[in-house]
Image (cartoon, rainbow, N blue to C red):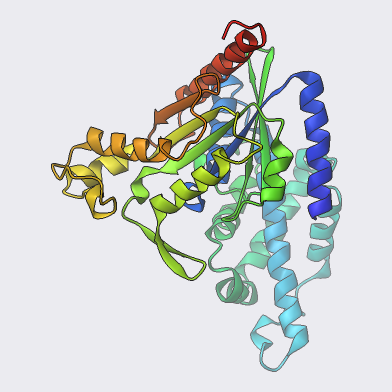
Length: 358
């Protein structure tokens, strides 16, 4: 898997250099949920520019088929493993025609031809509804997959999802889609500017993989302001979530590979943070150096911003550090346009630097 990822990165590097594509690396601690943010950015951009949801419809229908087949396979495996203890998972009476249909559709995933076939979609609806209604399938979902609320969400509304004439995915439908470890989206502006944003999911960023992004134009680092009074266990130690995010930020921006890379530091969920402070909370409970207990929101944000900026070793103007506060980052097209403006400024600054004007 590592070899495949590295090979993909090398191809991406060559392509972006050749085409002069702007490439940004979206990072943050696990509480920032960068994969979800990436999906929000893509959704907002596509809806605001093309209003095209076809891509999401295809992905959702494919995922729904995979979900029901996964439930069937797991159910069957447990029953075959121990028919006595797992007799409630018996699916012997299920027609194999249903299973062959699911397998056939998955074999055609690459060409998407089945997605425009009303008959196939109708048969799939009937198949998935039947399987999802079985006690055995419901039992396996509760036993093994109950934490996967997205799976239930799609299967509960499968008739709507498979309706070729009327289905339009909702915002929640799109945001519930699963993510890969490394995800990338492409945004086009004014038909001539392309900006790619890539993120790495998971709580631990591989230093080796980060170094594969040495060709990027800039780093977007998202901080969840609302985490200032939250804690998590990392390496068997209880640490403050915001401080953990700050430590991760320090490691990335001061890394040898990225020490000259422009930084877009985004403080997210400002509205929730503001509500907490106005209701009596104070960052002084976490930051000993903060002495103002008057629930001053602006002073609190300024202190946190300063705390992060103190961790940046290279603050040269030509590097470029851009700071923004947002509410639910990525869920607003204006915020995406702000990224584009920052990128344009980065490119202008670099051109002036190359020309000896800075």
